[in-house]
Image (cartoon, rainbow, N blue to C red; front, top):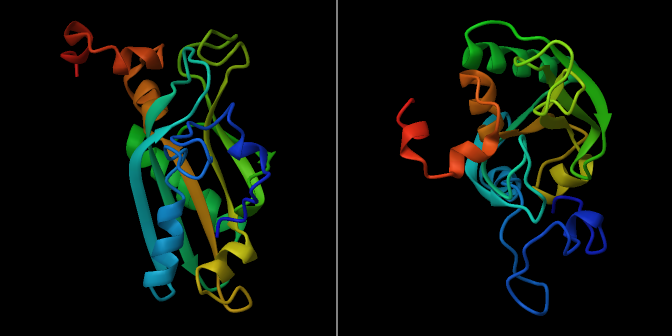
Length: 198
C-alpha cells in the first residue's frame, strides 16, 4: 500500500528488526502505515497525524538512535502542491521553535512520495560544523513529499481528483534542536540528572 515492494532496500535485515524467521513480522520502522488506514477511513479533504515509537537497526551516534518517536503527517485535498508542503513545514517548525528557522530542501527518494525531499535545518550548535551536523552545518530533519499516486489509489483515493503531501518527523531530533541537546542518546539514557532539566 505504501509502494514499497518486497525487494526494496528498506526491507533489508540491515535496516529492519524482524521478529520471525519468515520475515513477515517486523518492529515498525516508521508510522506511515497509519496514513494508509487514514485514507481508507476518511473522505477527502482531510488532515491526519500519526505519532508512535519506531525501531531501526542502525548504528547510534549523536543524531541517530535505533529506537525513537516519530510523527507522520498527511494532508489530502484538491490541487495540493510542493508550495503547500513548504508552507506547512515552515509554519510547523516556527510553531515548535517560536521563531522562523532556516531550512533547505534536497531531493530525496521515498517510494511513497513523488517528488520526495529531505528538509534540513541549520545547525543551532555551530557555524562551522560539529558532531551533531556531521561537520556540514545542517541537520537532516524530516523526509517529505507529494503523496505518490499509487499510495492514494491503495488508500481508495482517486489521484486524478485528489493530491496530497506527507512528512515524517523524528521527535527526538526536534527535542535536540529545541532544547540545545547535543547528543540524542541522552534522551534514552535514563539519567535523571539530565531528564530533570526539562
